[in-house]
Length: 361
Image (cartoon, rainbow, N blue to C red):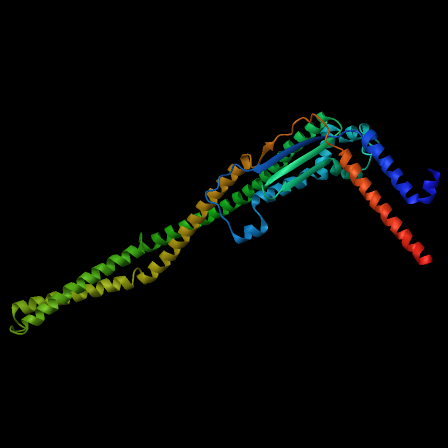
């Protein structure tokens, strides 16, 4: 043995390393129990239509975005602090397990504790199926299951709290906007009423249309009388009773048409077409203010409903069951991988030594 060590020190180191690591993995290393859970984050909101755009194909869906937010929270320092507060994370992982794999210092700073937390809690998102896979390792099956359940419950509570906080901010903003829009609507409507009272017209537009109709009918009647007068003048004298009567009718119609046109052009000192134009402008502003106010009220009501209800729900596809046997560490796999690595290292070192000896010779 001594001759072998002196002649092949590199292989002696390789074999000794494999023996020591093998002893650790097969005898010393304590079992770790793994609890797995598969969840999907859903919203009870019902969408009337599903929109697919090129942008959504590049950036991903809202569902995947929510899952990533949930994953980041589950792996955050804030979650670690909540776990420590509710379940005493430090005590379990420092008082159990072997000296290499356990938490060596129960009073370790939060930075070191967080690094250890990431070794024992894994959360990965399957982008293809759109689910979140949670894996928790602990020294006892009960603690492993309890920690996994706590992560899911606390993650759902955080997502709802974050969504409700955003909805409440939107409610405050919309409530303020609704008040402003209500004042604007009242002012627009009052201006319209004042303008109607000032001009003594309920609807100047309808007044203009009715006057145009009267003028058109009078002009049609005037044209009829002029045609009859032209026909009678061919065989009757201008002083005949019939010609005099028709001439009187024509003058009366022309006078009435002038009066109606003057009324159309002037109404209480203002041009009626100008009055109608200003009225239409005020009416349009009032209608726009009414529609905006109505939409703001609907948005406010919907947002209040969103703020009051449960926005997100963690639907469990695979519940965190109680482990019946340990899955970690993977003793044979780890030992085999380490042995292959050491053998290759020993082989490479031997080749280097042979090359150096050849160059010396």
